[in-house]
Image (cartoon, helix red, strand yellow):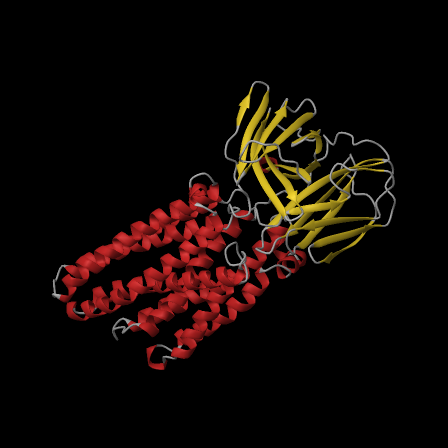
Length: 541
């Protein structure tokens, strides 16, 4: 038990260390006014266009002193657009339109757009975008998510084990008790997910969880349908487990576990990824298999402890037969999900998401090794009534518990970063002299990027040259760059390139005023139907 608790602490620590930035799939595609636009007259409204439906938390227009201006009206949503009218005209000057929205997978994202009215864009050195900030509520969100995953899987898995296995009479009461406790804990975590999530979305302080705004914001996100599905499913399980072995209801146990699993299909990176019909199905299969495995560990260990060797051997043999199909389905569904999210084996070791997934897979294969020992060594020993086998089996199951806890921790960490399918990683980059140069490859296209002087004391000139796989210049219909500095909570500094010669585009940025590792996303439209996304990291000194 001490080992399991120690591993739990390690897994939580890993989850917290992985959760430094909560990014999501929602991406700003365009804005009105456009980034770095110089307008002749004051805009009547602010429009942000995203790649998916979002739930706005706030939209603000700030002047150079950081004061909110424009007497804004209520924001509205129209498809993937978020609109906010301005009731007052903006005097001549430079402004920043900043936003914070909730993406489809419940992660808040923010950014900003700088524009000017009646004059060229001036420096915004003394104004920081508010949209990209984070709060201390990220930590409770991650911890609660860890227990939510673990408790839901244990509750559903206990129900599946009771229905699908011949559980010894001496073991059944404790399995029902474990399942009921897990279901109660899971139900509480769904409610806490709303409070913690809403507080984090609102960038709230210590008491934010008690504010109506935080709960209202959470109820407008996909956390709400997840809870509305999950809590009833868990209540069904609580009631079914409470009836005990003598009142066993197969229908209620199956229904409760199915509904609880379904609550994970309306939110999250994998289940909401296109094509949704395929990914949601694969996530469901993956969760059912993982739940059955997790739910089996306690009753198997308990059986080895209290049942006679022959009976324990029969239970292990039965489980081993079902485990073969469970592991196969778990592996296939996981492979489909991973392939969709990572977009190729090259990203497994070159992206943050890929490295975390690799760590999860390493623990999974270690778990498979433990299971193989149980099946090929300990199960035959139990069948032969080897008196030493039960103690060995219980010891191996403790290691499986520890591995499962680590896997859940890794799974939580994957929800906190953007998968490569949403952001293509750079192929290479290096600083040269006082500037920066990088070559970024995306499919058959290459972008040679240079930033000069790559410093905070002057305007930075960016030149990008696009080539095809034969080395020929490629003229793009449109090229934009979006800059972010995660360590400072800055996002959404954008600019549109000007073609100075075939395939070569020029940008000037005055807003890279903080030293650090700036992330640059380059959106290049080959034509109206082919957009290539290049990414690199630029050290600004």
